[in-house]
Image (tube, rainbow over all chains, first blue to last red; front, side, top):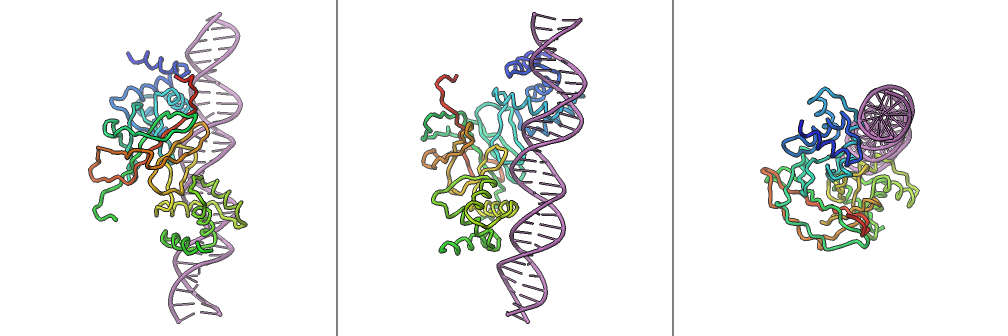
Length: 142
Length: 142
DNA sequence: TCAACAGTTTAGAATAAATATAATGTATTA
DNA sequence: TAATACATTATATTTATTCTAAACTGTTGA
């Protein structure tokens, strides 16, 4: 597996030792053909389905949080009962389908750059995210 | 109290009977000089501090959710352990100070209108929110 | 005015995500 | 390879939110 090195590197840079469980988590997160959104619970399920390694919830939480801190994963700002994460760490935005509880990526190119004219003294902007909530377009609405 | 009528109206329009507790909630939410952000816990505290009426958590949750559904309150999309709400229901955006866990309004005029070029078939956009996360601007940061 | 009903309130229980704990196991290092 | 520091895990804890069911209250119509 040519990717192992890369994962070990990511883990070390995140201040984590490369263990069997953590490398498994990396494989699921960073081996995928496309980037994807997930909740912790979903991630655990994927891991269990794809391999016979069992990884505890605590380990998944710890690893995901370390990756977020390092910028290898992104948390999606959304008021939901559980947190959503994104393996797409490039600058982009989201539709959130409130009826199906589903997130859809919006490429950066599809949104004009958000220009905020106001600043807060002593603070700098670390990230700007746009959330567009969408619902069914039944003509017969208000 | 000249406002009572207005509150009773808001409650009825939300499908709720105007009870003592609910009117109390309205007073706190809609009597304030400025709009404000709150969590459910904070709202309960304010109610307890300002009057001798006791209102249960369940009633506060129910009333707040009914108002959100009707558009009298807004939920702020934010991944936090608890939900944040806003009495400012006009179109506006937010800074979120990650170090102090504090929300700051950004007036609509301070953000160029967010133009999303992509659409989802059968869906329409219900709201567009911008969240800009801010942190201390210590020059000594990468 | 009052009875009857439908809707409300509430304390406390239930749920569920996230975090903490502490005993056991493993990677690292010298 | 032994010693150490860090990891893993099952389980317990915490905490926001939702649910429940019994007691209560606003509303309606006679």
